[in-house]
Amino acid sequence: LGVIGMAAAAPAANPASDYVTVKQTQFSRNGHAYYIAGANFWYGGYLGAGIGGDRARLVRELDRMRALGLNNLRVLAVSEKTDMKSAVSPASTAAPGQYDEQLLAGLDFLLAEMAKRDMTAVLYLNNFWQWSGGMTQYLNWFEGSPAIDPNVTKDFDDFMDKNARFYVNGAAQAEYRNVIRKIVERTNTVTGKAYKDDPSIMSWQLANEPRPGNDKATPAQKAAYIKWIDETAAYIHGLAPRQLVSTGSEGLAGSAQDSQLFLDAHATPRIDYLTYHLWPKNWSWFDSHKPDASWNEAIGKSRDYLQRHVALARTLGKPIVLEEFGLDRDGPSFSVKSGTRWRDRFYKEVFDFVADGAARGEPIAGFNFWAWGGAGRAANADFWWKPGNDFMGDPPQEEQGLYSVFDTDASTLKLIKQAAGRLHALERKAPSRP
Ligand SMILES: O=C1NC[C@H](CO)[C@@H](O)[C@@H]1O
Image (cartoon, rainbow, N blue to C red; front, side, top):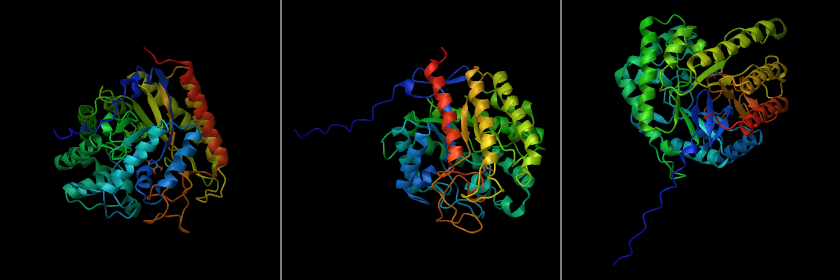
């Protein structure tokens, strides 16, 4: 008899408790409360592919983040090749059905390294904005509309209104679902584990900052947005029943300032937890050229935004994660040498709100600051990204250094470490709710 080869041992299935689950308005993992002390690290898969950095840098960055107590990273899972000027290249989807195995293997490596450090991932599967191709590029492929870069036209209202067509374009949705299935069912080439069976993938996110259109979104656009969220979340849960699904919404700023829309879009049981983002400068509350004069308005509106979203989370009975927030460097400047006094003051306010609220039992599940810059450095005098340059927290549609937190930003890193420590202390104290 020939030797009967032993089937390659399948990776041990993870116990169900390894997965992050939702218990009422709290995350739970391994029988304990689980809080997100996280960073935005959109380019982690690119570093893992050895593009715009390299695997050695990736390992160093993950070690730095882990040493700060960070336990979660929010990462771009796929990008679409586009002619838009301010988008990243290369892209993981060159054209419908044509996927870049090197980039996808980069994501494998990132996830394997994160799992070694007991870090969990939020992977977003599309982008409302242009910097990774996103919904605009799908529409270019499937309705033949030109992929127009709003950094060029400066007409963001028109860009957002047109992008809403993604939700109702059947061919675009079909390819989007092909990509979702390809990623969710992918076998990690480093660990041998399917993504859908990987407990370090905490959540599949429909997109980065999906909006129903612009602030004048029509009832029809709002209805299409609500339907798209529910049906896409159901599709993902069908493929990956043990992992969570979230929208990637900014909250009211990404819901046409319509709280009923936010509630209707997130009421579906297929959305497991809520997300919101906080951008005082982007939303013109803070003027980085007049910080003293604009600080009080900015922090007042920020506090109101934070409180309103925790109230919405109470209404929906779901955990909520502040998964993006940021403020300019002093000056304002993009230079790594510039100060971060106003940013630190803002981060401290945000961290106190999150940690104090979580300690009081609010439905606050944690934070991800935007964004980890680490050892990345701008390569050009104008601070714009070009293919081959370092990646950092600022995607190519923004100046490199705008919101990145660098490895030399000691005062900011100290605040991050303290905030992470406060949240982890809560985990040790409180077993998860029944
Ligand atoms: O998702 C996002 N929210 C805000 C970031 C900073 O402006 C931006 O880079 C990104 O598109």
